[in-house]
Amino acid sequence: MSKTSPQIAQPKPQGATRIGTQGTILQGVDMRTNGGRRFKELCADLVHHLCDDATAPQLAIIRRAAALAVWCEQAEAGQARGDDLDIAAYSTASNTLRRLLTDLGLDRKARDITPSLADYIAGRAND
Image 1: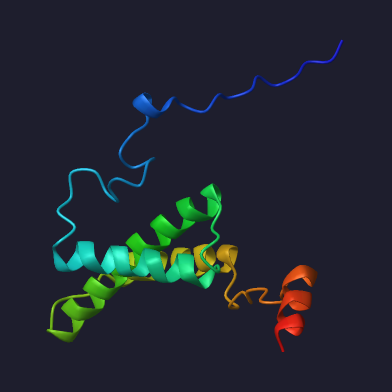
Image 2: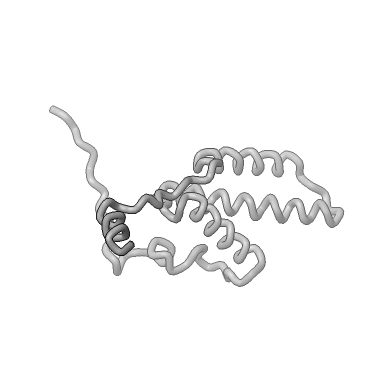
């Protein structure tokens, strides 16, 4: 007798969260702040790096990577202003960020721009 794992149903649209429907990036955060804008910018850059075709797991990694990148940038700015840098926390964040980015793939993904056979034939017919 084999046991199958239960299927997880997609939430109904009326039960979805604003984050799940892309209505908000971080719940309860004013994304007009410098940190909020930088977070959104990094998320968009990383999604674009994946040819605007990120899967749900990749989006989860992108969000964590963007948060860590913003944290590291803020720590670096503080250090440049003369503040103390918690090297242990900074090193941990940097290494975790590197691992997350490695999971996404550091090399830029090429988008397939090869036309379909029908598009190619139609284009040749117009020449």
